[in-house]
Image 1 (cartoon, rainbow, N blue to C red):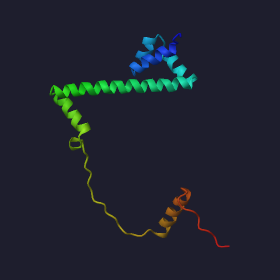
Image 2 (image 1 turned 120 degrees about the horizontal axis):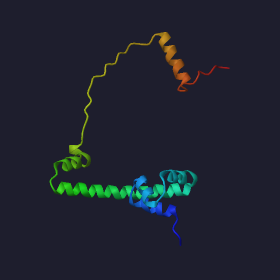
Image 3 (image 1 turned 180 degrees about the vertical axis):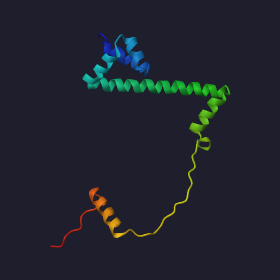
Image 4 (image 1 turned 90 degrees about the vertical axis):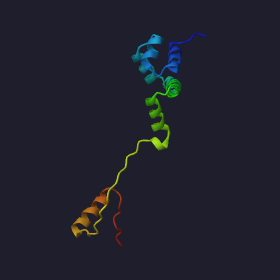
Length: 131
């Protein structure tokens, strides 16, 4: 069975999530890759799956390298791991404040404006007129 250029490209995409690299190794242009995606929905779906596989592979490799750096007592790697994987070291943002609530009633004109805005937004129905 003869392998097509699309098959070769898909194999390269499974190895590397970088489209330019996969295209170069397959001997096709990026424009051809994107044309194939546009013209062939099945190819686009399989290409997305291949990219997902290679991205997962790269994530595994990166995590492996990170763990190796942690084992070598690389403080940057240690801090990165703790900030992203341990809740006690996660970056936190504290927001505090005081909410002051006045109980001043709306004027009749303000009430009418609010009612009209709610009606226009479809959040309030018109009152039913008795027949």
